[in-house]
Length: 295
Image (cartoon, rainbow, N blue to C red; front, top):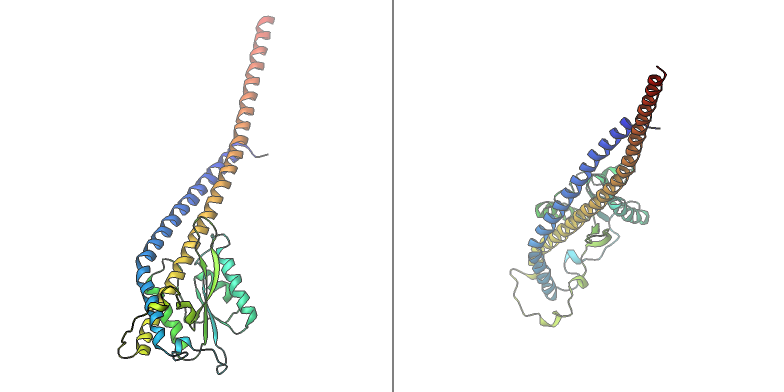
């Protein structure tokens, strides 16, 4: 049975650990609010790009743009996945859920190329000798539009060179107060149905695109993809912080329960020690009285 000193040492250790988990909870909360605020500030711009792209499709013949072309069998490998994970653990099942979704795609096609954001996922698949892009190194911390633009440039470079025909993205959609939802979306080629809005389909006005609709599309699509990737990065980042907050909240509750048990045990030992001391004092006083009476 542990002594009172040992229990007191454990109480101090758990108390210090709980301070760390509480601090990590607060830090994750601040990071999440900041990321959502920055995403909301850029959302109107990318939403306008999507609407303009939807109108532009009315002026471009079917399959006339490389961004909407159908896959072919002319290349030795043509599919890739952009997987978004975190840089470190302590985020519950956040990373493992996204990794399982990517592994499901890998089982369907062995030579699938992986582009991974976040060191956790990168190290996981490196240890399993998956087909990773060697030059693709991006952190999951503090996503920015600039970082999303660089990621988009790397992916489009492979796509425009004909090395890739399909690029999917696996990310975690954020839900406030509950676990995020892992989603798999086709990034390239784009689908016209993604830009079709029944409410505005008949309201498209005649426009003139200079030098041509295709040239304008070549400029708009990279920006649209940048916005989509940035949204996925922020979504995943907020889901990571939510998962980390949940993990730290659970750790804090467990620490409180352990502290309650240890304090009860500590007070029990202290009470037993005090009772024993009082018994010894009482016994000593009785012995002194008997000795005085015998004299």
